[in-house]
Amino acid sequence: MKTPTTGAPPAPATRHSQIEDAQGLAFGIFMCAFALVPLRDLGLITGQTAGLAVLLSYLTPLSFGALFFVVNLPFYWLGWKRMGLRFVVKTFACVAGLSLCSEIFPAYISFSQINPIFGAVLFGFCSGAGLLAIFRHGGSLGGVGILALYLQEATGFKAGWTQLLFDAVLFGIAALLLPLPQVAYSLLGAMIVNLVIAINHRRDHYVAT
Image (cartoon, rainbow, N blue to C red; front, side, top):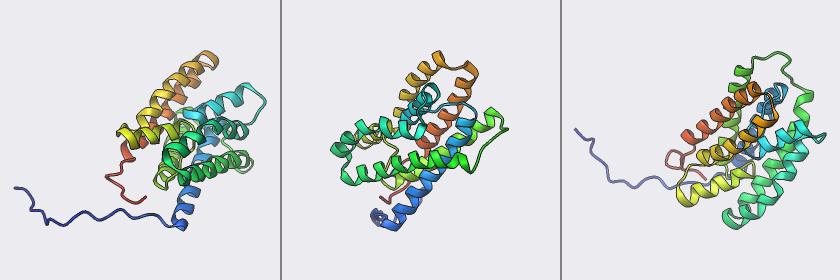
């Protein structure tokens, strides 16, 4: 038997306050910065522009924070053009915040002994939670994240799947440069991140903006 409907219209979406946005974005930045600690201690990589920056930091004397900030610069125009100034400002703040925190966190925490599978899973869940918070408060971590969110808004194609496609190319390149076990563990972490986002980042399940 079907449950009778009341006919009441759905509750309208509400906008986050500035304080709610600030704490949500701060949480997301903190979680993503924390997730990078076991990732880098294990010599693993991840996907998107963060993965590109991590890989370049292993191959050059430049730090991840500096590389991550620079590789995101070309994407702000697309973000402003397609998603608006509010989105770009939040994204720039998140990218700058993660770049800074990634330089600070290793001085306060490290993983001298951690199983690579556990480390990859820990990275995946922590990073996924951080990205969800950032997305739900109207920001991103730039790069492919901007493109993925735009495609989701415009076509309904989930952001996680766009990121997964980009990651496939990035990991193919990494397989030519890094030991295969490191690439395999890295792929596990990246898959968890993308699955967390693909399953949980749905506007019909979360109406605040």
